[in-house]
Length: 420
Image (cartoon, rainbow, N blue to C red; front, side, top):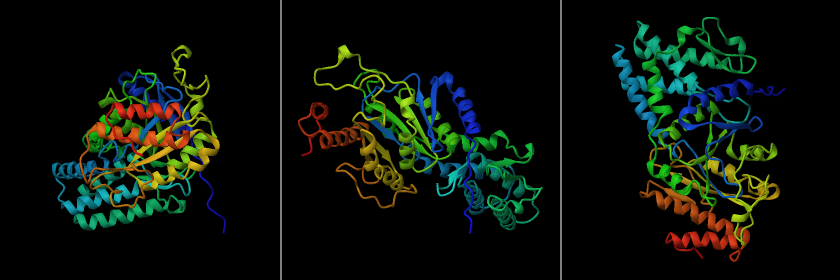
């Protein structure tokens, strides 16, 4: 049996959408440079905060690491129920939750084979709005109507792999050429109060203040030549992920983020693709002037020292998802052979999240930040970064190397006990 043909994404359309989004935030955040990473996603660099060449990096996942994305879904459900009541639709909380669930599931699909399902917010809003209109206009009970609607959605979703199942009166469909979700009519566009349900929750979820403050602390002072570079590394539909991240940056103007990595595949695969395509080398960097280097410094020469380059550097990744952390850890051998990068994985655990109960074998002595067991001050979280960085540098360069000594001195200045 022949395998299904690979779908080649139209990156030009996606890139245009991203540029439009960036332009919308230019007044608040300034400009961004963007480099495609093959078909794996994009790297964006903030023009107002160029990374320091050769310095180490702290990376933060977005969903359920920097922000309470799972928690926001509860608020979204509450706002949707309120919208239904205001619209005169008679429905139970359970039925309203079912409407949200089936449309959420409908809005997730694989854009490329074996790369996992991605959430598409536009499809979710359009589908839920269509379901809501169906509930309002139906003469049957909400239960019967939802059953009929779910069957209809299942048939439309089947057109993703079976185009012949499409019907002309479907309100939306999947385009055969590239499997994109297409609205048939402007009548399916949702009103602003309905869109606000998602804007107030899905696009702007509550942030974890201590984690955001820790990211700011790690990257401070932001004008220091010795600063740590800060990155947000998010997996999902790129335009949607970026919209959420830009809102976070807008709300936190002092957050010293230099780069945003948008991956539509596993993060480990994105990292390898970034090396293979030499993507990070295409972005500008700030260099330490030669006359400011200390005798013990081995600063990168011009054209080197970018992240994932041959110049030795440590990257500490904070993420709530064990699967993504393992995909990052799995790149270590490849990175040793092709770069000077050392990735350290730190898992953030939050109560009530989808990933909370999933198993994770701690990779380092300080590989967990378990918020279900205790609360953390921002400085404690940034100390975990420093400890992991120190251990990585010590393992790579040895205990007496000047870079190891420098990292050790930073720990001592903070009053951190040096691990043996």
